Length: 301
Image (cartoon, rainbow, N blue to C red; front, top):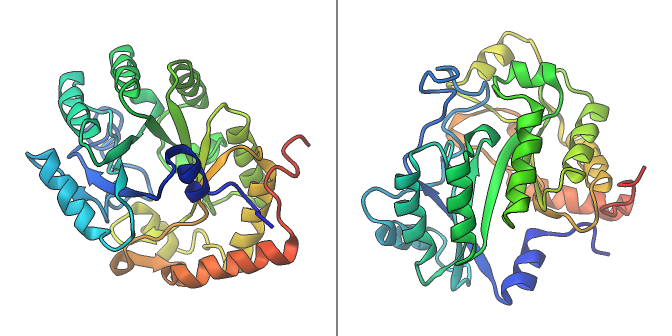
């Protein structure tokens, strides 16, 4: 039984061959770090999700070769260039054009994926992304994390939900694929609240979703709150239970890009069980078989 529409399945359907992601760092920052909106960043952020990214520096081709070496042996000949670190559209459009045009024209790159914020997509940047999308597929990954206002304030997301809705509408109107990041286990959120966020994402018009376990990492304000006993992280069993609810709440045609995630082990405080990603994925697979999970089962409820 196929429990959900996986990224690997979608990539094979789209490109007809094995395609692997190259995590790249374009040297961006974020408006919640440079003083525009805040200086502290999101409460959980230890490095803009860039722990495993290859810095681009002055040469895109050289960075792509270094990133390819990291995933050598995976059997891929084509790659998705994934600008993962911080906010990938938070720069002057001229800089973005130079960087992303050089990236997307690389012969080994099948698609360009950029992680960003909904409030960092002005008209010029949308026009650039649409232009690039006419060369090769462009995906924009939006860090929503939650639809609940109190949680959004706590994590210092620093934008309101309508900004997300508007960004999705404009990106989809330009023919650009949208993938939405969601965190399970944010302090104060119940399983019902998490399912509500997944359901909202499923109805947003986005094509894909990334489901991420909350990690408590050294050097974050979240770590201070955790050590002060202000919240507890999820057990593996609780995580799988709410993950099943989220998968069944989203449309069957939506691509699930991630079922969990792994922070850098050297910085991980909790939950420690998440450090063994292979075990976690095996337990998720066993639970999905046991419970006969089927994506979209309750999407219309």
